Length: 500
Image (tube, rainbow, N blue to C red; front, side, top):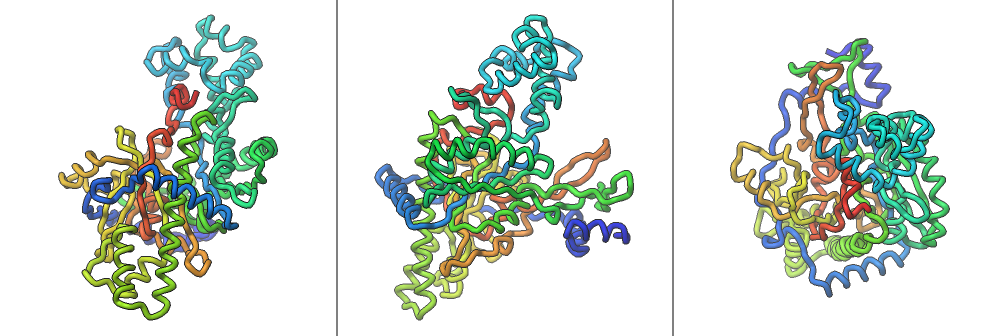
């Protein structure tokens, strides 16, 4: 099936023939749905909701940990253009009408001066059209305004990554999400006077991203009295997946070469694995707020980090006990910790020392969960693992059998959902880094329908970064307030009070 040209192409990407054959087989067999026990909730113990005094204790635990010289990194997936954010405005520019017609378009133009990028857009319009935004709108030339926001000769927001768009206004000038993440790193993820931040950036944007970071780094470092160590990586070509036709044969470009597609955010487990750190925070690039609203974010980031390091300390202590000859009482105590604190339910009533060691000696993550208010996204579940145990997992709707009424009820009536708010411990009790790809559940990828040049194709996504890629980690969920979740999915989301 694969020609010599194909083999040369995949070799250049760092992919083996066996991997391609496995991917093509996955198109044929599909991926199994996961077996669920229940949606995680506060009521069933799947989600922690600490009282105020306990929250304060966890925050102090984190502050103490930071003072002990550990290396902390803030990991921000920032790849990809923001084109989906401007879908409605692209449609307006191409529409057969010339004035705002939909509610979305009307809101955009009615409140255009409230966008943090208004000043930059006004300058772009004056340069390219000879008139500012207000004059163009007064003339009825709305499309020129939208085009100057979207296109290369203007702000180029239709192609730039979200991290480079102006999100928030300040007296000293507007800030991008990239800058907001640098500020956050200084406020809760710095230690030894250093704030380490790692951005994953797409290849076509990395130079621009680095240039913008270099422009802003010094001023923010001075303001927050830290030294920044900022690094970048790209999604590795070896994590791309081959596309397939409807009959599951390889999809080919017009020149006969194989078509590869990015493997989704699950590919970033490789980038995460390359980072040398004791603790890593993960949060999406667009989930940021201005300084006036950062207090909740900072408090709860410290809270979930405190939960993480408190649990890790106990796990490390138990692993050291297991290195010796633990008594029956000690084994019972360790088993209770694994089941109750780490929410990992065994298959037998009397877990063995070998089982307890296996469950304790693996990466750990604490994930913030917000109350469900109908936002799209995955949710927290108690899920059966391949070894028959039950543990906490973050699932997307694609992983759930929609023909199973009981499972769908769990998914639709769940009390919380996943805002992508993680803090991870990635070294073992002897200080050695875990090999993170070894903890991926490879059976949790999924297949989606896409198109290329008008031709339908099937695309294969790797197990998601916070889904299957972390399936075999110890996982704990903690309730965090909705005020810590403020994503920007469309340009008009920037008009919400939380971004003003």
